[in-house]
Length: 323
Ligand SMILES: [Zn+2]
Image 1 (cartoon, rainbow, N blue to C red):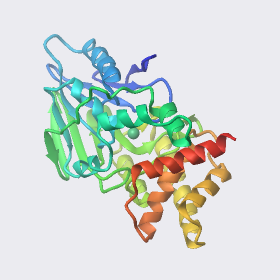
Image 2: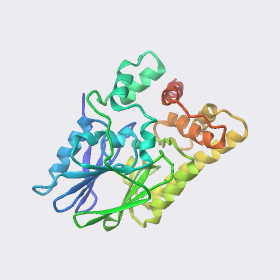
Image 3: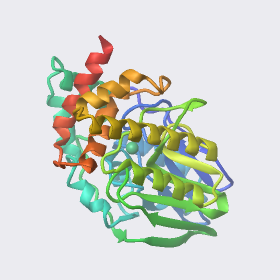
């Protein structure tokens, strides 16, 4: 099995972004901020193999005696969170609300079994194996944050100031952004996916919503004044890249509301938005099933979705699009 072959990109004397080599489910960006005798990770890779690679690359950059002793996770999706077990002694920081999201997803071993045991002859099984089969959670225990906060939290990593801001439910319940004022940079997790036609990524996928809250979160990222924005997935962005993404979100929101008003069911609405093909450069259009389903729940009546049912619909649409 090939591993991620991700690389660390230097953003500043003390700051690096860990960037997977391609787009796709589960391949999240992470950050490394180096202090004098301490270091912070911002998010973790999805599984232990990839987390070990990130740790080895991080340690190559640390001064003698320093180690990754703090980790902040932008949200509790496994692809930003489950690699934290590779640094078991590190303080693990998340918002208090992020804990709520962990009940929504299977734990790592459950997910491993789900992907392993799924029937590749079905659209769902084929989709899970194609997009998640490269990861290995067979020996990954559930990760537990050690520090939970609400609102804001500030601390230093050596001389560098770190400002965490909890966001209202947007991508998930419990999102936060990490503002590094000295570096002019925000790590914003999945409230921003790189969806600019200059440097395309994947379609966004949003679990909590509504999309107006995701737009608000993007505006809060811009309001920090940061010039560099590291999204949860895809290439590092400038401010224009965030504005491009706001345009994407507003388009999807407008279409979802219009189809809802016409009485079009959510799945059919997703199919129609995909067919409009407004953003042909973005991959994984079938994710619109999830994002539009989320928006529909806010337009009522609301039913809590089952993640596996959702993925069944995503996989079915992906199969339709391939034929
Ligand atoms: Zn993600």
